[in-house]
Image (tube, rainbow, N blue to C red; front, side, top):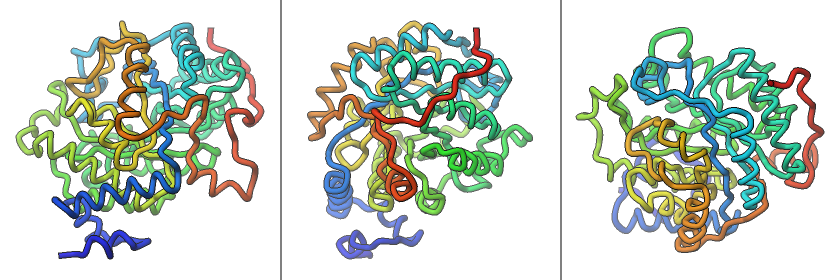
Length: 382
């Protein structure tokens, strides 16, 4: 049995040591969680940064075997917010001092979509007086597309790899050219090349997944020098092929606990990165996100998608708060964050300290008051 006190003092970890931390219980688990919280509070403070989540569309060209909005799901009710709806949601975030938003949606790469996002990003920056930070989570794109969106004003990008194990990746995706592990890796490299604060993440508790796989995921984050991570428990959806493997899944409570261990271990492994307390945690337990904040996460993403469309963005079943207004979500969020001993940092982009540390010697870090010059789209979407 490993000594938890000695282990937590280390700067580097082996796969076997991470497996132990992921599976520890009782007093060792308490010490693990306490130490990751201590690191977050000491190095980053107990401030929590907001990302107003706008789910812009559930149209998708991908057919991932785990996802409720996969293109083959004929039961999904499809929608796409128009520019006015997105700008209105972004305006709400700006007026309510969120500091940042996330534009998330199903994957598309057609020219009309690329132009539309470019125009929307530019308009959001313009209407907020350049004050609103923008994260995109819109899948695999070409380098030219990533650069256009970056030049329009986006500065963070989340592209979840879902698993760093290529064999497992192939087990949860169709074997087609449109679902390539190597392409996903290349896109992460391209995002960094374009200047984005680059984020990724994994699902925790997948069928076929082992603790060794999850330990390797943590090491993957470290080896690829990632700036931010959004990860959470795998939640099944009945209209997906992986639904047939639901009997092989560990119970939901165990998936929640394992996800908390992943958050805690990652904070220790990469103390300066941004780690999100994801909505999937809340889908298992009402205070799931708060539990992640209490042990080291520092990002939370209240859903400010127009209420009429929230129920249609069903990546998994039993998605929480689909009937809740943005106003109600904000009020509840303020109280719950304070209850777990943290404070919301208003009017702040909440950029990754890890990213800023890397770029500090090259150029001044960007803040909500000083951003790169924006490039107006040549052909704005109508």
